[in-house]
Image (tube, rainbow, N blue to C red):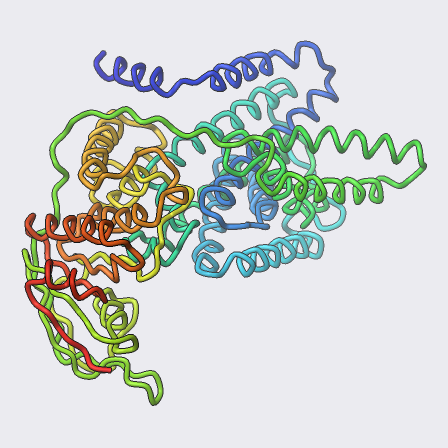
Length: 538
């Protein structure tokens, strides 16, 4: 009963007026088959299957920031597997698994590409899958199609499609506010900063694409049973394009934004058919007009969509201080780095010890940031060795590099995710009691850290003054649990008062037992904080 009471309490805390609106709409939608005919019910079921795939795609596009144009191809994979297995249940499960595996391969192959490159690569995947479906007889019978065994009734399909769409939206909501989603959002905003805070960007993106593809495969498997025939033309590249555009129209950052986009798509589709019949235009040409209208709609909405995300509220519950990594000493021994004829670092040696601040000083171009990057593992030295646990290091970047769409609280929760025991994707998805308790405990701890750093909890970081953003970078590095912090020019551009504030924070971290390596130009600050000073020549 305690578990149930905790779940009810957390649900009541997170409940909002818009939640009531959406819940009421879902209840009403469940009774739609009572007033529609068979053909209309089939159309609505097909639209809801499309909506479930679109909601899963929205997570990848909105939260992970990956413009995937292969969602229709993953639906095709699910459809092919389901068509050959025959059984609706077995085919749906197998199609889901096969599409998830295919999407995982695509994600692993292209997750590190820039956004334009990722879009182009996934678009090519869509064309390759469509060409294979059209050219080969085995997948779906080639150009003639393939008859598929019957599944549930039309009403059964509709209710199943509605449930799948709702579950996809709930999964989106749960994962987007979980450490998994916050880390993806951090990498979306600034990948370099996310990597500096030890967020495993490629792995998280691969998992996100795989999960999204699995939902698309399930939708494709059920769609082919609804239609009763596997038609390769139904899974062409236009399907992937259409799914992507409805996500942008509805809103990629709202759980039900993609579903709203599908509704808009349906309205525009009816309008396009009506225009085509009045003007005696072929269906293909009228739907080209539809695609143009959709693109104009996306541009006019400023790429933000119809539905905008609501900021999640998090219950906080006092808990023990999350464990930090064991203190360690990092030794840099005769580190060297060259870029052609330019010597960036020339046999530099120093130690970073627990409870001490080591300052690196020197003129611009003397190699201070290069040394930090070598210690952090971003670049490899040409000579010398690094001794100590490099995995226990966290680094702030030279430029101010917060995640502008995340709040300071979300910064700390994303950075501290690797310190959790119960924050895996499945636990977050199911919102298990241990996951909820741990989230509440970490939220309370993060709020205490923000109070210590004099930072607000709920303001998007992009709206904070620069001095607060610099302090937030240090707080985020601290939240990783690392025992050694590499801090690059923390007082750059700061006033005297702001610089003193940062200096006080760095001293407090040293007094806590952390080792700090600080690159700093302000020699007055260096004099006040440093226990050891390493001077680099030009």
